[in-house]
Amino acid sequence: MRDFYGVTLANPLMLGTAQYPSPAVLEAAFRQSGAAVATVSLRREGGQGQAFWEIIKGLGVHILPNTAGCHSAREAITTAQMARELFETDWIKLEVIGHADTLQPDPFGLLEATETLAADGFQVFPYTTEDQVLGARLLDAGARVLMPWGAPIGSGLGLNNRYGLRTLRAAFPEVPMVIDAGLGRPSHAADALEMGFDAVLLNSAVAQAGDPVAMARAFALAVQAGALARDADPMAPRDMAQPSTPVIGKAWL
Amino acid sequence: MADVTVIGAGVAGLCAALTACKAGLTPRLIDRMGAPGPHGCSWWAGGMLAPFCEGAVAEPAIITHGQNAAAFWGAVTPVTHRGSLVVALQRDRGELDRFARRTSAHQRITDLAALEPDLGAHREALFFESEAHLDPRAALADLVTALAEKGVEIECAEVTPDAIAGPVIDARGMAASLPGLRGVRGEMLVLRAPEIRLSRPVRLLHPRHPLYIVPRADGVFMLGATQLESADRRGVTARAVLELLSAAYALDPRFAEAEVLETGADLRPAYADNVPRVTVRGRVMHLNGLFRHGYLMAPALAAQAVDYLTKGIKGDLVHAD
Image (cartoon, rainbow over all chains, first blue to last red; front, side, top):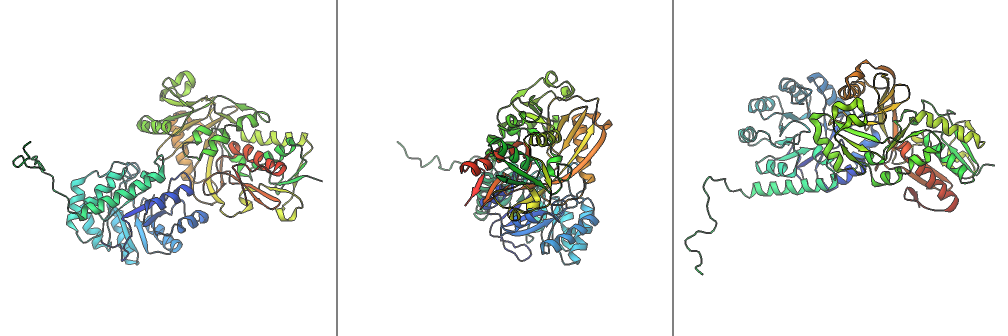
């Protein structure tokens, strides 16, 4: 398995920490999910949220602070610097939002912030689109991981552009990639792993489920299934039906 | 000599003192700021007695105990029994289905105009007929009056449970800084919009900016509330105002013409499961963690504290070694 800035994850699952019914449910969901990474939003919930932060630290997983809600490179850079100080990690999930409604990444701001932060020693996880050219630019700018979206944040639509995602995966076979955002169901996560992505990152799909703890378990099983299937070399789809038992040679009863 | 000393005159402490009186005890009531006011988070509450709506995400204990809250309050302060409504914008209709699946004691209304004419444009809603609401500030004042009638006055002093002899009910909220207790920031607005008539609380399900609006007397509405995992005590942020007002505007564009009377921000004390507790430590009982369920859960919490004190009954909200 590809590693993330030298860190090999026990499970290919990263889970967000927002929008759970309570911290107790969050904690139970994490345990069931086996998630190896917790993303934490700094902009609104950091700073004074010491008690909540203690709960997150108590999960015993890698912490990936994010710059959720930042609409410019400058804002994202400032937030990343605060996050590094607060969470004592060089990891940063870099989000620069380009549009308030679709929450799609601003590719230009993202590139600018990636350059600055990578030069400053950050280990950047850029939240990007499936655009291959942008991917190449982000890697040039110093990112060693890419986080292409499945679909807009919180939409639950799954893998919206499978062709684009496959192309991106194939273009940079050595680069660790995480499908970030837009996953709604465990089948989406399994699909992403089968396609060769190294991990998935999700939040709403678990936190907003009627039973977040059960859904966390479902995602744990799905990423496991997807990773197993990928390594087992899945059969290729065919247009022509092929009976698994040939007609000739059928027992004649 | 008092039978029990209650520290903290927010909704939890006042309910505990009154419940103690009703059980035949003589309580003493102390608060560092005296009578209830803007210094306590009870002041900033919405006042919805909506156990079934809260049940969409809250633990079952909130639904069970919350159903008895309206009866307690009815004996103290005016309670409006007109149910509550849940609506969603056309774009987010799936949210209404989801909320319906995750709650009970509601009916689907397809002719909303008949029930709440000013919301007619939204047509569809969930109606929780058994729910109620009250005006929290009136309720606090009425509790103070009810206690005064029983000879209990609020003493203005800053004390800790250790400094008091005999049984103590510690209802100081965040000031108690108990282990496992955290602050959850909430922000709210009070508007006057005399054009708009609503007779019951309305919740707008919005994927990003959920909102509730509680009508109060004289065309005044309380808009709430953000919920941030932060113990930041700053005043209301511009973002919160923007989000709450945008959601209100989406519900009824006439809110744009409303007069903004107040903004408020405070911390809700909460435990990890967001369920309140009576934590017993020797002669001290800590009543805390009411989260966003102050008026909904304070009566049950008070009843369990007094039952434990007088009869040794250990209710489900009581945590004792």
